[in-house]
Structures are given as C-alpha cells and as structure tokens.
Image (cartoon, helix red, strand yellow):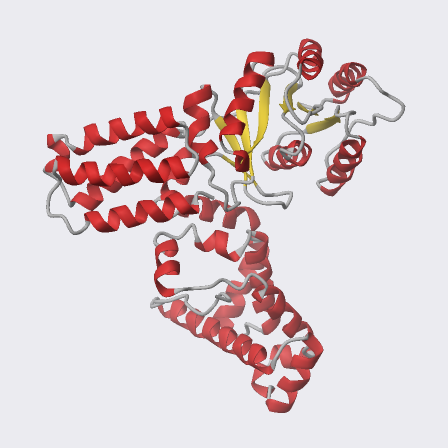
Length: 441
C-alpha cells in the first residue's frame, strides 16, 4: 500500500543527503516533489496543502537547522506530520453498554461482511465474548458467508432463518445477547452500490433500536477519494464514530488513508491487510508513517510473532537446539509458524530499510517458497528427515519427483536448513551475525 508514494519519498530523501544544510531553496524543491507524490497517491488536495505548509515551517526552524543532517531532519519532520495526518495515535473502541453494540456500515464490495468476522475474531482474541448478527438481507449470500465465517472462528452467530426484517433481527439478537451474557454485538448491515435515502433510513432505524457504542464505516482504500466522500455521506446520514480501511495491503495509490482523518474528522480504528480471517490490525498512525518512509515497523512484527508462536513448541525447539537434535520436521514447523504470521514480503517490509534494499538489489520474494519447502520435506522418509546427511544424489532425485520440485529446489532447501543449523550454533555461542538465507527470497 502507498508503494508509489513511499518510493518517491525515499528518492527525495536520498537527494537531500547531498546537501550540507537546509535552505529555503532546496526545501522548496524537495517539497514540490513531495506535493506531487502525495497528489499522485490520490491524497486530498486540501490535506496536501496543509501538510506541505507545516513541513516547510518546521524544516526552516532554527532549532532544526542546528541539529543532525538535512536528510535526517527531513525524515523526522515528514514522519511526524504523516503521523499527525493519519490521526496521531491509535484510537480504541468504546465498549459502552451491555452488550456493547458495534454496527458496521458501508457500500457493497467494501469488505464489510468479511470485516465483521475479522473484527469478531480479533475481539475474541482480546478476551471479549462477541455475538455476530447478519442483518444484511439485501444480499442473501452475506448471511451464508457470515454464518460460515463465524463457524471458522468459533464465534456464535444469530440465526436469521425465516426472518425478513432487519429491525426484527436486531431487536431479537439484542434480547438474546443480554440473556446469554454476550458482551459485544457485531452487526453487519445492508450495503448499496451507492448511498441512497432507503439505506440511510434503514440504518437510522437500526441505530435507534441498538443504541450502538460504535458506528464504524468499512471503506475500500482502493477507491481513493471516493472512500472519503462515502465517509462524509454516511457521517451526515447516520453519524460515524470511526473507520475501518480495507485492502491496505494492495498496491493501489491508497491516498484515502492519508485523507480520511483530516477530511472527515473520524479516526481510522482498524486496517484490513489481507484476505485471511486474521488479517485485521489496530490502526497505528505512527507505524504506517514509518512503513511509508521505509523506517520499518518492528513493533507490529514482534506483536505478530507473539500472537502466532506456540510457547510450548518454542521451548521444545530450544531444547533441541541445545542438544543438536534439530530435524527437518522441526525446520518445517518453524516455517509454518512464519507462514501464519503473514506473507514473507509483508513481514520483511516491516524491517527498516528492506524496501530500499529490495529496489537497489533487485530482491524478489518467492511467496510459494514456503509451500515448496513443506512439499519437499513431506516427500522424505522419517529416516531422511531425522538425518539429512544421508540425502545422496539418488534420494534427492526421488524427493524432487515426489514433491513436484526440481533437484535444485531440494538442494536449496537443504542448504537453507544447514544455514539455520549454523545460525543456531552461533546463537548458542552468542555470536549470531546474520539471518540471510533462512527465508526463501
């Protein structure tokens, strides 16, 4: 997301490294490029104008001129202003009432139904007890989709069988949630191809019944300024408390993320970063600003690791490392944990400087590499997995055929495994220097 903007900003910062000091002239040149980059990313013109004005004011300040290098100064100023434009800090949900009702609204195609399930899963992982209500009867598939997703995440879903009135559904779901002790009610409402009076009237009637603690707009970030206009329309019609931006992992221009907070006054509370059910994150403005400037997002990376790593397995692996009994089955287990954290490229993009390195060195990410490694290991016998030393040329040919890979793929996987063993030995001695070669890039 915002890859084009990120690339242009990195180029501008690189040019500034050639200047010994800041002057109004070279600042104007840099800001002209920043302005064009933001407009090309579909950022609202008013937001761009205000952003440029604030950056220039700070860049020419005396306090800034007397510290560090121009490039470092500029990075900090731009990062601070990007963070401010995006909302300053993360905005938490309000859980008011028993149960706390969260209504999700939006146009068709914005990802509202899937986001309802994603949010339910996220809240459940935080200790909440959510209850899902499929109130989108305008699209019959939405009810079936939500029922299936609720089973996948093991969250209860209200049975709408035989009911044809969203108001009746919401009133009954609210009654049941109070009886059964659910603390959160997530309501997926109807959408339209565009905002109309019938939709607004239905949402207002549901709002009156439910008295929601949160009214969240689910908006597709790929629609750019249309997403901002949609947010304004919903806010005027029913009153919003926040926004969930979907498809922030896409390679679209993504200017909606940089425009939404300023133009609507509503905070972005969550971001959809993939199609998987766990691909919903709390929106942290400072972290996205860091990613845009290729400063990484190590905090999110650590949080993902903490959520997915099995502590019991981690202790078992630690014991095997100490005893030098780490097998290819263990190697496969580690790769599976990495896979659960998300795509390899999305993880590496959280490491400071990766995007710059990727462009400079022409690094390509083989997203299917982890699947290929698993297939290769699965094609081995138990004896081969425990003792890879016995993997001679004949065995490697057999494994390649059985896994649909090439002998070169098998050789590469064995090399990665050996590199991981070497890294672990260094780690034991306190001298680990590199992780290169472990991931399939």
